[in-house]
Image 1 (cartoon, one colour):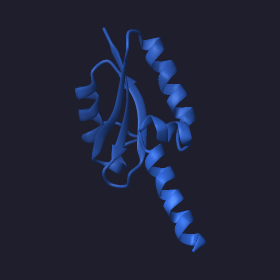
Image 2 (cartoon, rainbow, N blue to C red; image 1 turned 45 degrees about the vertical axis):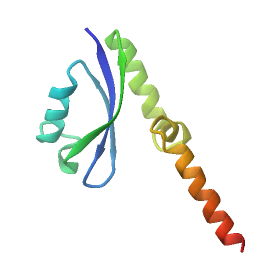
Image 3 (cartoon, rainbow, N blue to C red; image 1 turned 90 degrees about the horizontal axis):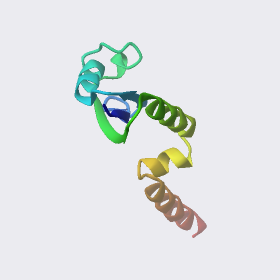
Length: 98
């Protein structure tokens, strides 16, 4: 049985949720029907990143690792947002210099 580490993003306000499961479809359903206390006020959710692991312990370790990244450069790199953010900052800085 494989375990999936996932990152969800709220379509309501852009918040992130990081977790792991062995049934991604069912878990997303739980999030989007208000069955998960910590996410029900930010419905609906979409999956923006997944990683697959062979054991639950590997998946849990990775979940904790990603949670330590949250909000930082490593988190943005994981989601592919780092380069976009850096380009925007460079453009903004160039505009401010003139």
